[in-house]
Image 1 (cartoon, rainbow, N blue to C red):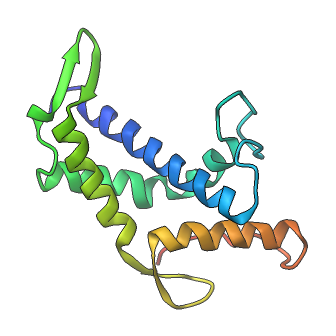
Image 2: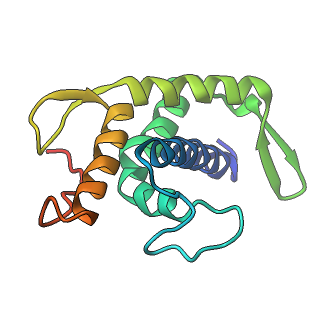
Length: 146
């Protein structure tokens, strides 16, 4: 893999994860543009970015490794112009397939003990944050595997 290709995949993965968390924040009733750690800036979903931190390695980085290792995305799927690298349409399609497979993978939620998809984990975690903010639970239980 040439320099910049992995970075292009990671950037795309982070964009997809931010989008998914922004949607979940809206569904739960949060304003995804008002966060705790990331500074508010026009058009930047600060809360989604805050929530994303714990899921980068579990979802985004894992999807990148899967896409590259299983050749869902190949070196031919990247376009270069000077130092800039982007993915071709075929590359994006292959990567989205890897990302969606990861989002559909089942894991055991550490708080509730039942198996749910990573997609559902995102919603459960945002709902737990809402319960913490409203005072229903004493602390926000971050999501951890193993």
